[in-house]
Amino acid sequence: MCNKSCLGQLAEALEWLIDAQRAILIDMPDYPKHDRRLIARDLDDIQGLWNRLMTSDSDVSIAIFIQKETFNYADHFFYGKMTIVDLMSLTTGQLLEAYKQRWGGYASFTEDALEYIARMSRGIFRRFKRYIALTLEMSSQPLLDLELVKKAVDEEIIRDVDKELKGIFRKREQKEKALEVMKVLSDEKIRREEARAGGVKSTAESYGEARPDGLTQSDLAEMVDVSEMALSRLVRELEQHGYVKRIGWQHWTYVEENW
Image 1 (cartoon, rainbow, N blue to C red):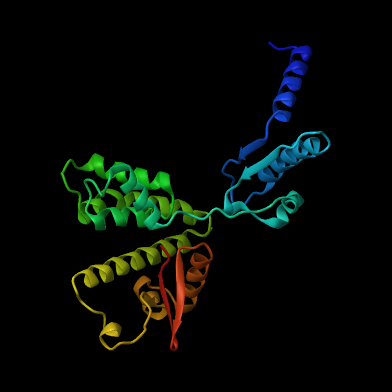
Image 2: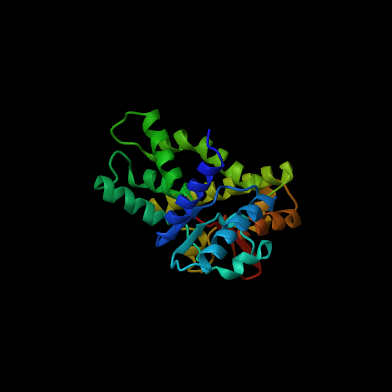
C-alpha cells in the first residue's frame, strides 16, 4: 500500500519522465459515437498536461490519435490548439503490396481471391490479416480461389459491416436496408469484374458510351424493396461515411461501391 509520501514521489518521478521526453504519443480509446462526455473528459486531462508543459521549459510535442468517427471540432475548444492531420485508410493496392512484400507474391491465393480480401477489408490492416487467417483455417488447399475465400469470409464481412452501420443508423430497419444495399452493390461489382475478365463488354461499352458503373438509384431501390426517396436517404448517409459514391450521368444517378 502506497502512502501520501510514496504517491508524491511517484508523481514527481512521472513529471520528470514526461519533461525528459521529446514526444508523447497518446492513443485515445474507442468512444461511443453518440456520447461525447467521455472524450471531453479525456481531452480535459490532456489539455491539463499540455498547459503544464507550456509553462515549463519542456519542448515536448504531443501527438494524439483519435478515431475520425467521433471527431467533431465543436466538441472541445482544445481542438483549436491542435494541428489536425487525417490518416487515410490503406488502399486495396497498398494492402496487396504489403502482402507481396512479405511473401514474395500472392502465395496460396489466386490474384482475384486475395484482391477480394483486400478490397473487403476497407483499408483496415488487422481486418485484412483476420480474413486471410479465416481462409487459411478453413482450407489446406495449395491454391485458394475466390469461391473458397467468399465462403470463408463473407459472413465475417457482414458482421463487421453490421457493427459499423450500427453507429450510423440508429433504427434497425434502416441499418438492415443499408446492409442490403451494400451487399447488392458488392455482388454487382463482382459480377461486372468477372464479366470483364471473361472479355464480355457491358451494353454501355459496346456502344461507346461513358456510362458509369454501378446501379441507378431507381433500380437499386427496386432491388432492396424501398421507395426511391428512402433509398436516397440511405445512400446519402452511406456516401458521407465513405461506403458508396454517387455519379450523375444524363438524367440518372448511379450508385456504386467506394472500395
